[in-house]
Image (cartoon, rainbow, N blue to C red; front, side, top):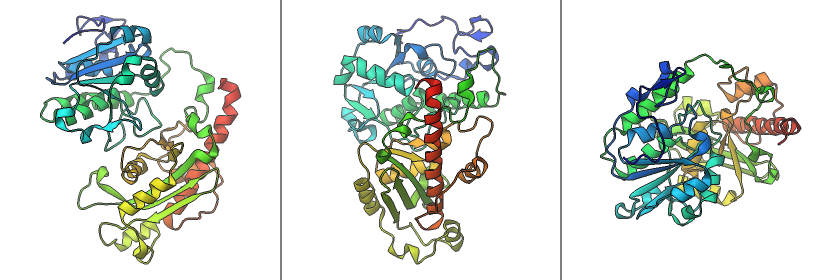
Length: 396
């Protein structure tokens, strides 16, 4: 494996109590759990320089695990100068012009996969400012579940960590390659170990402004209200599977905040709904007598959506349903991922509404979905108020 990044020669080398292999405290070192994966596709990781020594950076984990992997960490100009793009290369980068990797014929799939490592802002900057990447075909993933990288939150459910994205891509490109599950297990163990630790300051200076309510409210929610769409969906399990990805939507409601436009439909369920399910949904059999097929619901939803829409929803479950309704990986903002109140974690939207004493308008849609949508709209409106109140303080 070609080492393009200057890394320590020994995994056991330490300085100031940290492992210089993974840059984690010695007690939290995960180097021994990283498997050796004999991948065939070359993985080229372009890493933003600010990620290089981040203690939770997962590109380091990928680079150590994969036998056929290179990592370039530098300033943008340095990356551009050192970048070597091989034949039949592809860039793993979501967007409207990116082809779903699973739809690419086997003989046309990339032999070199370029992966961008950094925050979403860093990734966009790298792709924008490195001209050579503009000519590389782009591919995207359709994750079956949101990222489990809970120690570095992303408001969008469609975004994955570098290790999750790389493993997902290799599962498509090389389904027979061994060790990918073990690599994810090492990643999950690192996340769980960190979450189990009590929060502490670690001697670092704290920014008082960042401890206030709503510290990571997406800037997109402050845009034109005519582009902000709040949505909610209900689902049932398809068949006997307990996999969350096996849930199928049966009710979908949405509201465009700026114009008041509304979307509501009941979707034909895979079978007769039990009385307890109907009671939970606060609906009846009569309501579903006019339910439409999923394909028809998709067409109506796509007609309702606009290219400039900012989709807001409360949790990752609704995000998975959105991906089914949109027919592809959907970009959205998960409100539950926002650090709304640093002193309290809310398990449900109802809990958040009650404890924050938000004013909720009467629901216009029927059933439980209508009530949940009204709650989500109230939350988005409150988040906009919080964000606007903080803008002079933070110089946004």
